[in-house]
Length: 630
Image 1 (cartoon, rainbow, N blue to C red):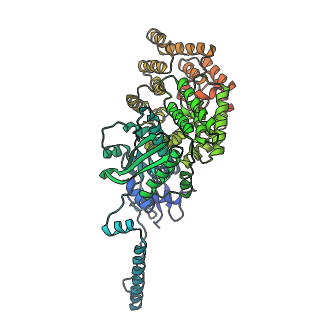
Image 2 (cartoon, helix red, strand yellow; image 1 turned 90 degrees about the vertical axis):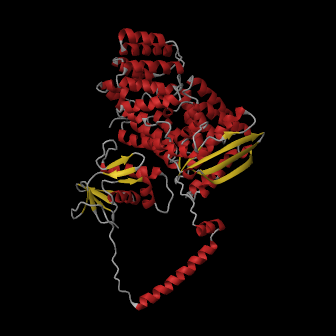
Image 3 (cartoon, helix red, strand yellow; image 1 turned 30 degrees about the vertical axis):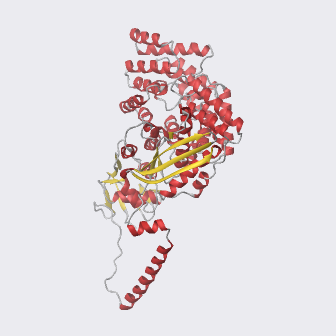
């Protein structure tokens, strides 16, 4: 066990797994302590992620996320800031560096070394003889074990070939080889289900669907894709659907060498399509020697038969749900709602359909929401979450949905517990980390929110998930850069244009803010305010233009076409009309289960657009009534 040492003012005692400062002793998990000791071996020098993973977890396949969480825990204990590190610095795409001074307990400035047990070179003749027989017995046992090895392992051992160590995987979109091009949604659904099953294996890092689908029609080589996604291996394949039969072909490629490690085709009845994805996930995990926990293995083997009609309705519902933000929101949400309801009608015990139905009714952590929610939307969300958890208590997405309902009930502790549970059940689900980050930022816990955003970004590297974290931390230029890059890939994402408007407004880049607000309005179906908005801005300035938009929305709200009190409160806060802003926040408070969809009250404390209201006693009282006060 390494000797005690100091990192800055902290006393580190590896033998006790504690760090101490000013009389306060804090415990560390053993693996977190090992990470700290490894870094202390090389003070001031970069230590690669690979080196840390191989030395701290030498005989276990774990994802990078485990290391990221260990570093986050050390930063929490040391009260360190990743942006201005005093203890641990992140070296982008390389690893980490311990920047605080390291001293042994006797005061010497040096790296930490392990204590070495000294053995006398003098060995008795009797001891030598015993060593011979012990060695001979060990050799015999070794040969016996080799004789029991499977043929493939024996061949690898004798030939010196080693199966590549694979800790991270990306599943590229499965190609639709069906005769009907309209079956693309089915191939997309099969891809998503395979990613979902693989991502439940905590020892693997699995890239999110939203990053993998970027490469659907790419000309890039597999090694190039793997480098961009920072993964060891890539899965590619195809789906053929013919009548009530489906064939899925998949192959696993070790990316650095572009080497095919495994390939297999599966033919099944369509009703077994979901169970098929679990079988593929199990086969891949076995092939790469990934440690699958018993609970994870059980969940992968638990998928049951689903009728083709129910499966079709469910996959089409997901297709429409993914399109929210790319056109009129309510239209896509209602199409998704109808599809998920058809799936439930066809199979009332199919848990994923309830989860989809809940999200089709605009849970507040979804980011976009309905334009005109009703109390019924809340009731459906609540019922769907409870039913999904009853049918599948181990569903990460069901717990995420339940968290959104608790947020609407202002049960913040219960919501956080559900968000943590969602991550524990599927540590590779970027949306789960993103939702938790949203919750943390919204409730004023910026440092914790930043850490969850970093994990989500690592799992979904092509989606620029850090822009919200940067925006909520006042790092506007970085947020704008990421949003613009995201909009280059998807210029029709109305939510992203609206987010960009907010950041431009916060950074006082008003012409750009007006332009983005107009674009968001067009994509969300508000085509009538574009001219008045531009005219008001050019003739009377930014606040007057925002006031114009707010009044237009109020007129739509009085006509019963929309209900967006949180957005109205933002507009009036920005326009300098505190009374109207407070009015709409109070209206959201009075209409508790109708106002949840636009997130106005969830974001009451953490939304920088509400900053002009912070000194208003009415705002402080509302924060207290919501249970968001310190």
